[in-house]
Length: 281
Image (cartoon, rainbow, N blue to C red; front, side, top):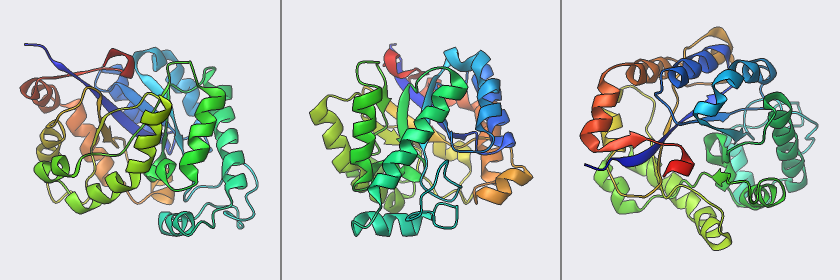
């Protein structure tokens, strides 16, 4: 039986020490194939050093961030008080075409530079914290950043578009998943039209409530077609630094326990999947 390649990507590396440690443990155990890093975090320079010895085992990408945290440089329009806005305000500004795109572009450059400075290499891929990379205006800046600094490198960009029938068949938080997928269609079309490599299926969206055990969700995320499917996840250990900056805390520990345990490789095998980096798909 030929196993289908699957990218499993842990988001938010660098957000807090517990998150980074939990992700590193999974990388060392061979349970992930990609890691997305928040280079604007105050922890990033130190945590990048932790990642270096394991960085060749997975694709290491840049998790472009425009919400909640302090930016790396001045953004008087978007972060007048020194902290980026919540997702609701950012989305409203994007769809009403009132984002200060010059500020966003400059911040993306700073985050890219911070990634390279700490890790000693460019990112293997680009994506966005809370999927901000696919918002109107923002997606153009992401494509420009890719064209100028990653074209020809083999790097890729995460696409969050997914066919609506596939979302409905999966039956996991369908409304939220459909909103994210619909928001991602324009970026997915642009990636295809410009020849930028990307995943062709996106899974992993749920409500983080814990109402449904994660061990029941992951097998459903493994269902579906695609030559380059990607499952997004958020494992880690909750700590005081995480509580200060993010609302997803205890559920990260739930995901970490699942990805650390025996049920995970069993689910992969039953679904006919194998972990793969993007270049192996």
